[in-house]
Image (cartoon, rainbow, N blue to C red):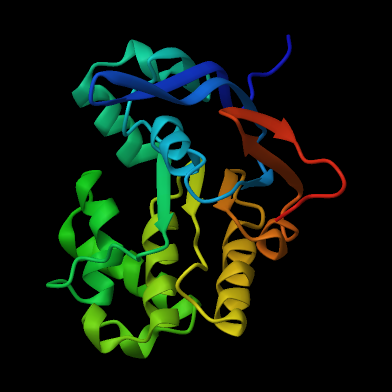
Length: 233
């Protein structure tokens, strides 16, 4: 019996109202990711990459089509069930870090574990161990505004992976970083995902970032395609 892909999106469409008009952002998206795959989605700013991530990560629902993670059809879940599923099975890394400013680094990283039912003490121990593993053990009690941009993004990566999600979605993860720091963050994503059995989708407009992936896709005119030669980005 053939196995189900880790992520499978079929005929996904999404449009937004702009006054009296409807603007189609995603038209007919098909996307499949296997466990262990690291895939880059390349596209120009404003092409709908972040919209697609929100649909794949169970934040929003598509207007048409289906999204399934490990065979679970997200459209069949009510809003609360979808939220719980997202907390357990999806991790997010954002360009803007999105760390909670009133929480320390270790508290930020521990948050997904606590939301999934872990006791605070156990969650903090797990978070501290992961921060130590990525070289931020001595910064565990620092608040986000006390950390450099590179340190904040490393904390964001740790928070996204601490609960061992099946799917990691990264939205322009190096967009606010210099080239050297961005390269270190990408290396960290590779290192922490090695042997984890999850899939990574890295959304970017940078061809250099995309080339660090196993496979490159493009989002153009609301449709996902395999990348060809002669990319313009």
